[in-house]
Length: 225
Image (cartoon, rainbow, N blue to C red; front, side):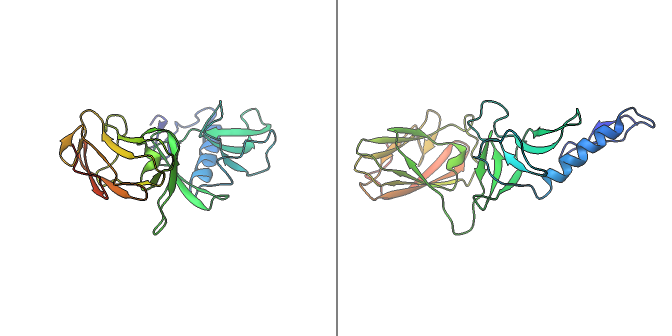
C-alpha cells in the first residue's frame, strides 16, 4: 500500500516496505503531532528571536513579512542544525497563547480569540467606516469619535459568518453610528437597509439569522430603511 496523507493533522502513513527515507517522514510527523496536540505557544506578537531555545513555540506575528501566522518551533532543521521550523496553520487549529492566557482559533486566515463564558471582547473603532470581519465575532464594537461612523455588514461570500453569529455595536462618541447592510444583505428584512443608533451611549445587537439575513435590535433612531 503506497504512502498517503492521513486526514486531520495531515500525517503520513502506510509506507511501502523498505521505503527510502521513511524515518525522516516519521520524525517530521511526530514533531507535528507533538506540536499540535494540546498546542501551546508563548506569544503571537513577539518577533521571533534569531536563536530560539529548545522546545520554544511561537506564532509568527500577523504583520511579519514571511511565514505570518505560522506556528514556529525551535527544533532541528532538515539539514541537522537547530533552526526555526514552520507549520502552516489550517482552518480550525486551536492554540493556547501563554502571554494572553487565552485560546485562539485559526479562522478565515487569521488567529481569532475563542469566546470565553462571561467575557466579551471590546474593539474600538477609530475610522469613519468599518466592514465586519471574522475577528469581530462575539465582540462589542465601540465607536468613539466625533465624526459619523458606518458599520457595514458584508455578504457571506466575503465574510462567511455562521448563522447565529452575534456582534454588538455601541456608540460611545458623539459621532452618529449607522449600521448598513451591503448590497444583497438584508437587515430586519430590508435588503441593503440601514439604521442609525439612538445616540451617544446607545447600542444594538446584530445577529445573523439566515443566508445574508441579519437582525438588529436595540436602541435605534428609527426603523431600518
